[in-house]
Image (tube, rainbow, N blue to C red):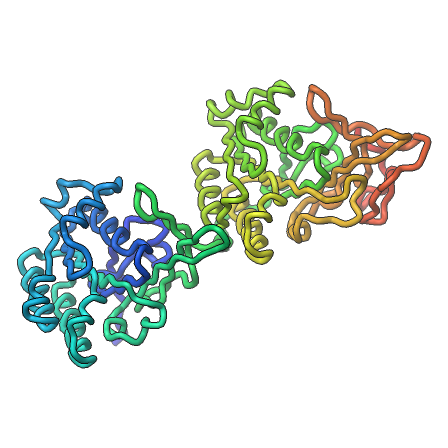
Length: 501
């Protein structure tokens, strides 16, 4: 006889992100150990989940031992947004086991909890701190028996149980509660230079496919907010398929160089030295999209939103009006405070909220300053571009190169090879004057012009004008990344073409 598998019922943690990490939530009737040093957020996380479940009509039992008095616990939890005093009367019961433990020892714990469970019939039970029970157990055998009896008692009532405690990493797997636990979650505070990162890791979860590795979270007035570690979206085959359609850059003449514009849903890196006009090109791209009914998001790590609005006014663009019409969102993040997982989570939400079809990231150079390692930086950009593509957005990212005249090597912090398109902006010295130049070095899967053309920026914005042929003098600092020159060159797959105009 073939047995049919029954889906495991689960309790939501109250966080969609953490439920995803768990593979759908906590299995109903499971025993979970919430471990971590003092101050990592164990108690806040437990109470946050209880208030969430109480709002869903579930009954919760919170048992304190010898770690924190009940009145003090309630006083501090009142400062969080999830707190609701009415739920403490109707759905959340707090019981103190401390007096019984001091009087009768640890052996009385299972009987006390059983009595409360029979009386309150909770869906969720928490014992905080379970680690404190060890101080009243004379030997290892008694501790193991107590935690086993707790697990059996609570499993009989199908109550999901949290054993909360100040467990060190080296105690995981050694103490008896970890042997009876179906789920082990560790919260950590990890120092990184002058800041502290809050991390969470699921070390064990029986019968579930969970997201392993370290994830991140913050604690604020709303409680714990989780940010799953950076990763690309699942390749389900349901994402946007290549359409062959083009997206206008909004820069006159640049679409001609690209053979009709940027491929829809592609990722483009715009490289150039400081002051060359990369941000202006990005604004052109977003304003053109907004006017065509394609909302866009600008993620800026350099200029603030007000600075960008001022830049826009200089070219006759009312960015604030586009923001009010939900055609544009400008989101600023300081590179000093950049957290890759936090940023990716917020970026995805912003794109989904606005149904954005265009995204500008300004800039890769600033982002690299805030990411602790090169591999983590590449993971962020790779995952970010994949998520934007999956959301149906076309992405443009800027990157600064250190060379002022020309570009002896391409940078983009190792991201250029992964980009679909690469546009290079640089200065040329011609007859004692600095001229802006622009060229398309790569455009994946499309026929494009590789000519080096003049870039003019004035009050009307940016325009790709004619080439530099016929000018007298020497072009100083002209890079030759593809064997080209500052003269018209062959278009890929075709005969020599004139410069765009």
